[in-house]
Length: 155
Image (cartoon, rainbow, N blue to C red; front, side, top):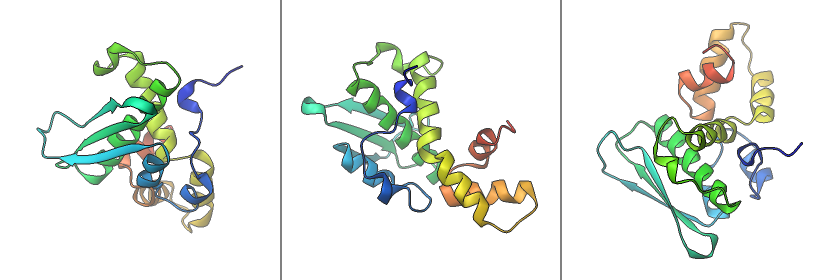
């Protein structure tokens, strides 16, 4: 069975990226030929991806959002870039409930909290309290508590 595009890891220097949390999105973007810029946008706009000639692309992010939201939006837009790279560009990507948006959300979650790196991190923290472990994981990976809870299957 072929993995969906959003479950595959891009060809980036994962040994460098996945050494310790949080995942270095600037390194991932650079390896993929993505230019990233931050903007003073209205709160309703989180990010955007624009494909460029030659397989490159540009990501714009809302600088007014909290760091965890910016990281999720950044990873989500990387997902759009990879979807386009494999010929899956969809004009419905601007609808938040579309299949493509859900796929990019799943990709972003996997990119920000790679299961292997999360397992290694969780094995290294000394707490028997599962709630505290989730809080520490969210902080280390630069994601929201809600995102970490979803990855744990709590939400």
